[in-house]
Length: 533
Image (cartoon, rainbow, N blue to C red):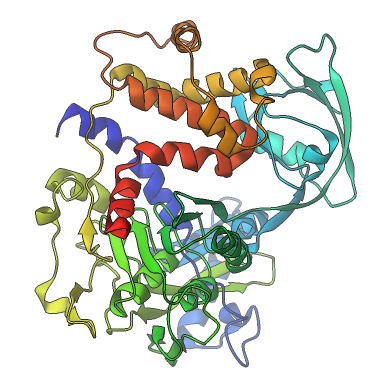
């Protein structure tokens, strides 16, 4: 494997963890007649055997037994024997595990990083209490309730426990801001904080629009409809839907998004399990984008609900799937809350695309499920379309005569390899260490006079150019943080673009970031080329 591939592979365990944590279907309390907790109250012989054994251990074991821990370990071990996506959620993790899909939580509303042992505000969340009070990107939270927390080894978990709380309660924070000689004190009243799943929507040119969806949550369809309506008012004729790195989420959200593109009566997806009858979802006449050209971007991090949308569009010959083979998760989970506040997400069915294919990849004992991304790298699949392994026994044909495959993700219609333009060691280390993002935050904080000249992200993109002095400041900043510039600098253009996008993100969130970063994104550029032709 080349050095460049090794550098890129560093990030793949993160992708895998996100996909395995996401891609769930939270059902309505498991169907008719189900009573939460009945799973562990069954009177079958096997459940009695487990219960009797646990009681025997509790009563007779030589040492004191942590019965709660033993019970949870038993549940986890049992689910591990089933499939990679059936899982147990402890009571203390239940709320946090559902927040990304529910679309909100209670808190002060800031995106933050811990940099040099200090909480740095990356951006206040739109509509949240921090934004309303004037807290800015680049602000540093030094005190909470008059206690100094900077330089104390604070963790992300500590920050969340201190700043989150019930709606209506207050928290006092002291903020250090560039140009202000004293700490600024804010008494923030916590409120419902929206978690957006549509990161950006903008017009690439006069006819082509772009929408990025990061997950399929309860609010995703409404967010998508709002962006789509705005783009249509601005002349949208063709759409790029970016589902790269999207781990999935609610099945209903995937169905609603698919319905936007398909004509009434078209099959979107169906599910079926041993104990669950076949259920099919069809498109209605409510779709708002049934006729325009459509390209969907996918990669190895696109899973579950992302694959449902991609499969529905591909199997109905509605649009073009561009990118790399998707993750391959075709299992449906349902969540049941147990009596102690914990929960189980159990695989209860498989889902099938309109042609009848299940795209779940193998997960038996002999299959290295968790090592699949490494296998894709080593086999060259991410770099050469010919390296994609398909199962000829899982061949299907769309109504338009296109051959598609099941048994392991959605294979794109147009392959775009992972970008192999070699990044310099400096660029790679700036990204890996977070120094590039930290410099962007510092720039946004220190150069308000520059950023305030632009009323929106579009003006910033058109009018801002990183000067040679600013670029030299980045290199000096990097060296002070242990990242030295050396050797050739053949990725300076990409680095400049990356930095400009991050500066825009600190001011305008995703609406500032994606229009800039996509200018050098080969997959987006390929999609534009296809739509133009």
